[in-house]
Structures are given as structure tokens and as C-alpha cells.
Image 1 (cartoon, rainbow, N blue to C red):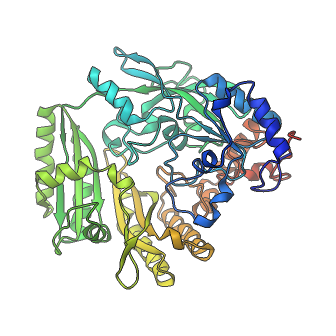
Image 2: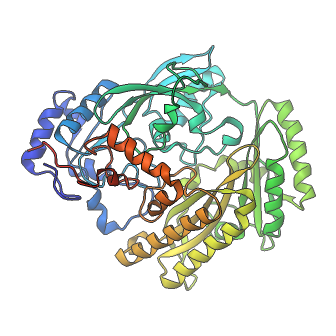
Length: 514
């Protein structure tokens, strides 16, 4: 029987579980050592170091096939043992962090390419494959898979499905939900279903029945585990243009960003607005950016992909718009180099300042929301005020500025993020409580401005998750109904998204493991 929150299995219970797993896995696929378990508790989002042990699974498994995943989940369901899927572990809201022990299903060994269909331009892969490695192989055929998160070199396709991830070039090619055509999915009972638009594996639009594909994306592992996926491919771009412009004030940069997004350029892949706080951070972090002169108060980047002749024509239009808004071009070297290094920043920002101005090592975290263009300035001010208040209370935190990225090619809404430096070695329980309150306030600002708590990272961490029922309304009750129906014993990633409320009479159902 599963014990209270975070209580590990007894030695006898663990032995029984391992014996059951040996019926579907080899011994070398069942990992019980402390090192193996600790390695599968860490995610990039900072957490109090002294509390990492709260996230330890009882064991981890490394399946290589859908059948093995299904077998593991059937055993876990029968024995009432929690299951947490883990792909790249790059998420920022604890989707891959175990909260109730149990089994971490590490999918990184499922990295095969099963089929490459050059005519229909699709590829079917195991969800443990990484986009960078996949694109290295697709490049031989003049194709690429354009799902491009900040964590591109280290995130995996399965994690992108589990979070319904957002792509840096989504304004041109779409985001994960648009690029994943279908996938095989293991339900919490161990049953396997195929999810897509209709029943086909390579169909991009169907009106046959409910649109189930989106239901099984972005659930953070609470409704099962994707195992193989069929992805949409595009011609590898012949040309890329990524101009960066500087501005001496935020308002002109903001207006320029909106104008670029509304320009109707077919090759437009996205625009990014860096605010003054972000520019100030980049000046003092010499690993992240070439310092800008003191009169630079904001930056704007725009990106285009396509054939050379169309990119050249579209680029002329965007350069004209930028000039009309008072922009100064930063030059080819900085523009090309900074865009090429866009994925490096997922790991490199390490420099924060304490109250006395000292620069010290810090971990990085960002809070994201979906915000309409017209509300960006007011949301930006409110968020900076929240972090300023946090900094007045403790030097554990630092404001590293804000980005706003177009989510679509018309610029209707933006992935809006505030980056926060966190001195993780000093992140004690008191500072953590302050951070949770700040996260809740940040989420409340997004909702008050008609936005969504999260564009891509998910909202299942302490703080923002508290407001999910407020954002979704009756829809949250539907989530509870779906969870209870598909996962009657609450084994799939329990403790996430407030879904324990689906089992109000017994939030931690007792199990059969004796």
C-alpha cells in the first residue's frame, strides 16, 4: 500500500515491484541506485537544495518499446504505484519531478527513427529522440523538423508533447501541437491508443469525432505516456535572416515589434522584444551578449526563413518598418551570432547581482504567460514591480528582464516571460515561500489582463497552479472528470495540476502493493 505523501516504498514492497517489472523489462532497464534516482529528480527550475530528497522516485525504468511502457504502466496500475514520465527533463514547472515517489519512466532510450516518408514529408520516431539529432539526419534529405524551443539541443519530442511546447520560430511553422500529426499513447491503465486527427497517422485535419490529439498534449504526464510520434517536415530553409535592432526607449521598440508582426511577410518566423531590464542584465553578463552602449534601452529581433529570393524581399520590408520606428541596426555579426546562440542561453545565464551590486552565481528561472499585444506594457510594469518587491525582502532573487515573443504570424498574442535569477544555494524555505507568492501574483496579473497563466511551460508548480481553476472555470471541472475516468487510481504523475481534487473522498487512493 502506498504510504503518505513522499513516503518511499518499504524494502519488501520495492522487492515485489522489481520482481513484477522483471516480467516486462531486463534487469539493466530497472534502475534502483541512489545516483540513478537523484539524476531523475532534477529539472532546470530552481528548488531548495535541502529538499531535493522529497522528489526521489523509488526506482526508474528505461523502456525501449511501446509494449514495455504499457507493461510498466499496467503493473503500476495494478499495484497502485505512481508513474512519472520523463523525457529530456528540461521543463520548468516540475512536470518530470516525482512528488509521490513511485516509478520514473525515462524515455530517452526510445530514440529510433522508424519511418521517413519523403513524399508525404513525415517522419515517425520514438519520443526519446532529440530535435537536434533528428535534424542532423533529416538534413541529408533537404528537410527539417522546425520545433525550436530554447532547450532545442537537450529537450526530447516526448517532452514537447507532454508540455504542448512553444517554438521560437512558431510564427512561420507552427508550434508542437501543429507539428505533431499523431502519436501512440499509453493510458493510465496500460492500454495503448493512437491519437491524431481522426484515425490516420499522417492526417493534419479531421472532423471525425472529438479532437483528442490536443487533449493528450500538454497534460504534463497526468493522462499517460506518448511513445512514438509522427511529425510534419518542411524543406530545410535556403536562407535565414535574423536582424537585431536597438532603440533608445521601450515605447518605440514595442511599437516596432507590433508593426513587424502585422507586416504580412510570408517568411516571417517571429519577432522578439527585449526590455530595458533585459538589456541591463545582458550588459553585465558577458557570457550571454556583447554589451550595448548606455543609450540602448530596448532591443528587437526579427527572424525570417525561406528561399533566398523571398527572404531578401521580406527582409527589405522589415528593415523599412524598423527604420520608420527609429531603429538602429546592430550589424550582421551581432545579429547572426546572437540568433545562432539562442539555445545556449538556456544554460549559460549565471550572473546576478546582490543588493550591494556584487555579481554572484545564480540559477535561472522564467515565468511565462500568454498576453495580447495591447497589454504587454502594463503587464511588463506590473511584473517588474512584483520582482522589485521580492528583491526588497531578500537578496536571493534578481530581475533579469523580460522577453516578449510573437506566438503567431499576426502578433495577436505573445509569449511574455520575466527572467528571474535565483541564488539557489540560499533558497531556504522562507525565500521559497516568498517566491511562491510572487509566482501567484505574476499569474494573477496575466489573468487580470485577459491572458493565460502559461503559453508553453505549463502551470503545475506551486504558486501559479493555484489559479488554474480560476482561469479555466468550468473547464477545470471537465479536467477533473477526464482525469478520474482515465486514471481511476490516480497513478499518473499524481500531485500535478491540482488533479488530486478529482479524488476528493480519497486524494491518495490506497493501493494493492503489500
